[in-house]
Image (tube, rainbow, N blue to C red):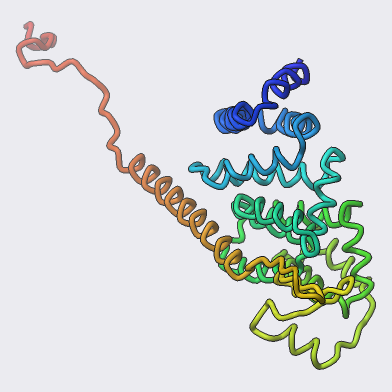
Length: 321
């Protein structure tokens, strides 16, 4: 029944205006009923991606969530969308496009489109950077997480990311670890994630075991200088006759194509969004503390009794005499 309803809505949503209304209506329903997102969210999103083009659906969802006022819901929704993006077979073409973000203008444009809303979740933004092979920015985002409150929710999301790194989706990353000299920023990002994990956790042991398989590599002085410098956007890679800096600036030999992403401003955008989430969490905690203190200070109600006067008291035996 759900699939039939989606088919009908998708037919109506072929018109751009109706498409926008459909996605807004869908997000609204997920907002008011979180159980719908948990139980049917993946099915609904995947089906719409098949019927209405995955890139179109994800771009529209990202635009809506970027301005979402309910930050907690936006974070949950982005985490769900990120998991669907990384695991669903229906979105394999979208993943392939994102993998080409550094060398493909369409992939870069999609990455930028998703980035703003993905900022609601640190693990989602790191996943997006790893998928797009923007390892230097992934490392910079990981370093910025020192400001975060490393609580249970944070560690649960980090554990999920570490598990995803062992899935076939990220097989190319595991193969790139065979060339640590070439993918130095990938190593730095993964070791950064490792340092955020408790040593006794299963995620720590899993990632540590993977990193132990990385072959030893001796870095030359230039590589070490770039890796240890304070500027996280200085490494230069070569790809198919073009110079690619890991901040996204791509310049072909003829100099006609410049396809750049300002990652410094993107990092500021991420930090600003996370600052809003921290302020919200702080206000919620203060509200809970205030409510708890008020409930403790509230005086207990005395049991209700019928007042009795001296004249209304029953006479004792001695008084009767």
